[in-house]
Length: 358
Image (cartoon, rainbow, N blue to C red; front, side, top):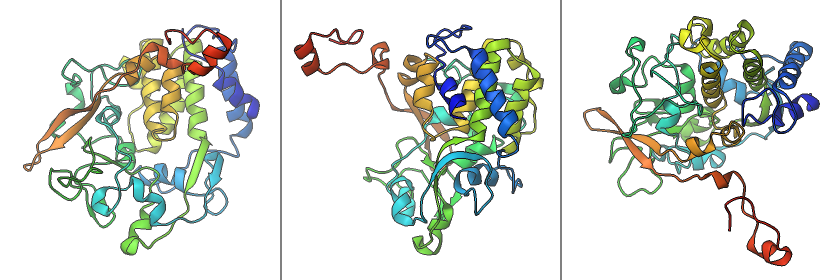
């Protein structure tokens, strides 16, 4: 298992060529992932219990323990003792008495498909995000039935399991981000700048009985869904869209309640590039807030495009109208792939600094 993960982490998709800069090929990464699945598939699996709504199995894959709760999805993790309100207060919505420290972006929300498996937007780029115009608007795929006016309706259940949005029942109330209301009070510096709060990784049981509840919370480093995504990504780079690639992605998507199959999406099966962008999107939403994205966009060589894009958010008017906005502008230049060597070291050794750093 260690050899497998070392192989995949050494793959660098900078050119999407057969052989990468590290000398590890996509074929080797694909073979390693397949070997893991074949060798350990009886010991590990996606958590699929309580599949009534697609939300519980996804959340419980991260919250339930291996031994007490028979969670076979987690492979390498740290198991905390039971924690209480103080452990989640920083990331909980301000209306619940929290500090709102983790607020998802509209960029992330836009990556979730419709529940029938169709795409709400017409095209996606290599960062996994929809293609935005100069006003920060993606082009809607009319056939999907998506509308900004009801943007959270009929979506992949992983959205609801990951993001708290307007009208969601949560804890001791309902999320309300209308300006001046419960979760967006005027003058509160901790109120969400994007119109969203995070739900993933927050055990709701802690909020019960006026925040006196407790819960175990895992810190997961590797889980089986990532192995499947690794295999799909590497295999697509080797041979393009195929039944095995579709199967890996469908198992993950169907766990969250999606009914459609990837094989039926002609916009994805037409080319390796289209499937690559889709896999980048799927990896982002499945592993959201699990500390993969920052490294993924670097190894995909799309960090400039992904991390210099504005952070988008939404405002909700008193009549319920939803409008998009730019919540924050960001800067990421090519030289930022590498840190600069500290000036003191340059002066002492006369070493040449990393490219474009002076």
